Image 1 (tube, rainbow, N blue to C red):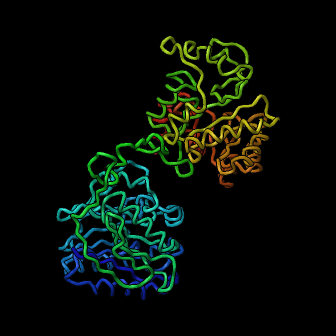
Image 2: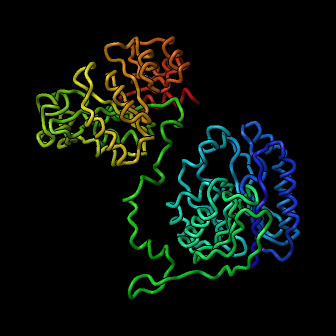
Image 3: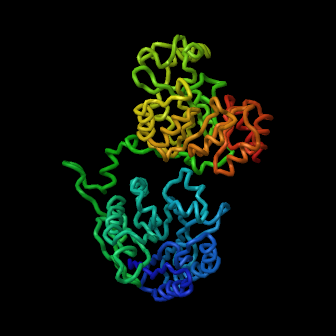
Length: 534
């Protein structure tokens, strides 16, 4: 089977778009009947650098229909399968899309880029909602050949390769646009992909100039990792003969039959050792939409506050956020309990920070709520993170004995270390009423969002948030007004309100443009917010 990989030139001068688009068309017209598979690069409907959303959409409106029509004509004229990348229109905006055309010029399927670079979301406003949902790797079968897909940035996410390998792919089409990696780097990535999936990799990119040492790298790689062609920075096309049925098998350990590399690896895989992943992962805090409902101390009208059943019930019902409180024990363990005293929620007495963790473990933190919860123990921060990391946004309330003194730096660093252990910096924010702690957190972990609490100065909360560079405030019921909310929003600050368990009151808060409502009765307030937004 004859494969043609096309590498057109690329310019950072947007005014040359017509010229460079015509070069793409010219290369397609050079394809002939000897070819079975033809691959073009990413963003063929944006032939030169678009620096703004307006330029990008101007190019799409001008070139999208033309390039897709030419791809279809080429497939039919050459009796070839053609793969080309351009935008497609979705309900929430454009999607970065690879189109697969069969030999008759019909669209046999589409693949949507799974890993959008940040600018595609923030600057160009491409639809990204689908990237936060579980999905299996796209497989398009044409003439019995199983095609898988990656688009540019997708090549960097090696953890996905094992999942692709399980689909028994024959060919992986890579429409790419990397403009800064060296030729050797792109070759390594493509070899690694081919070897790990036991599939041919056909990668098309753009040339940054005939003498450039970066970009380009359109190539064909065999399942063994052998590079059959690498165009480096040459403009034009490379044509290679491949045997689709030829796979690579190796000895799979002493006395075992030969197997594909991924089959050998799969026998010893331990997915729980890696980063959080899977269908339960939600959008991180910075792009999770508002308004939100935050389950205050979990869904604590049905289970003891700051407990696994309370958090679990809220998360299972779809809570965007949970809130919990942290204290340090006498021996430095980090535990979740609201009050400094133990009496209200346990059969213990005294203050939490006067006890070691082992001493606290002797107390029952469930039976005062109800007999069905007897035997529950105080929770550690690690236990919460281990179960819910990246499954919900966490409003972490860091408690202190007073609101004027800093906390031990090693204690705060231990909290941050636990968050890092479970890879959820993007899913947490710190809330505290203590201005000294706000300053400490800014120094220790400036990238983790900080929320300013009311404390002893609730009416000054917005000014304090601005002073300490907080991205959120947690307003206290009866101690705020619309003017404070408007000022916060003008300064890019999100407004939580503590708290409401009443549907009518919650709607009043939403009328005031509150972003997040903390509640003890998650279901009631969640339904009220859904009713309001619908």
